[in-house]
Image (cartoon, rainbow, N blue to C red):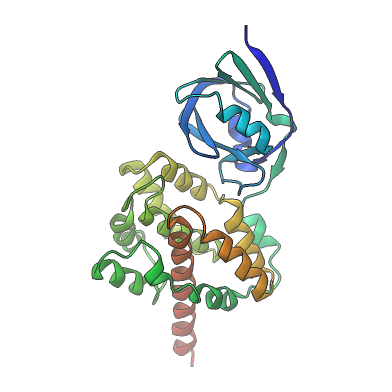
Length: 291
C-alpha cells in the first residue's frame, strides 16, 4: 500500500496550463542532482525547487519536498495526471502534487513587453559586453562559427531562407542537456520575439523542429519559445532592460544567468547580445537611408 505525501504548495509556468488539465499517464524522464523531468504524452515537465529558476515548461515545489521525492524516485517511474493532480509513484510512496492550487507565473514574452516603458537595450548590451561572450561562451569552436555570428551582429534576418542558414549550422551543435548551439539560437530567438521581428526566424525554427533532432530538453525549449514563453531568469532580464532598469540590476541578473550549466547561460546570453547588435545595425542602416 502506497503512503501518500501531499504537496499542495508550489509555482508553475503558465505555459503548462494547457497540459495539466489533461488526464494521462506518463513517466519520470530524467533525474538530476536537484531536479527531475517527467514526460506526459511527449510533453516534458521540469520539476525543481522554488529556490531555483523556473523553467519555461516547469513547476517548482519546496526544496525539502523536492529532496524527499529525489531520494526515492527512479527513471521510468510511473506518473499519472488526473484533474490537474500529478501522482508520482516511487518506492511504495505516492507523491500527490495538486497543481491546480499552485501559483501561476506568467512567462509569456509578449505580456512582458506590454509593460515596457522605455527600453534600454544599449544598457543591456553594455553589461553583456563586460562578459566577453565571444570568448567565454562555447558556441564558437572555429572561425566559421565566428564569421556567422559576426554576420548576424551586422543585420536583421529578412527571410526564412536566410534564417535557416544560421539555424541549420548551430542547431544541436555541442554536448549536454542543451547543446551550446541550441542555447545560442534560443537566446537570439528571444530577442527576435521582443523586437517583434520574429516571423522569419520563428518560421525557420518551426521547420527545423519538424525536421531535425536535438536533445529532448532543447526541443522543449524551442517549442515553448515558438509558443512565446521563455524561462523566468531571461524574462526577468528582458523586463529589467525594457522597463528602464538600472545597470546594477541588469548586471546582477546577468551574473546569475552566467552560472547556469557549464556554459549554457553564457551561450544563451551570446544569442541575446547578437540579436541586439543586429537590431542596432539594422536601425543605423535605415537612418542612413533616410538622410
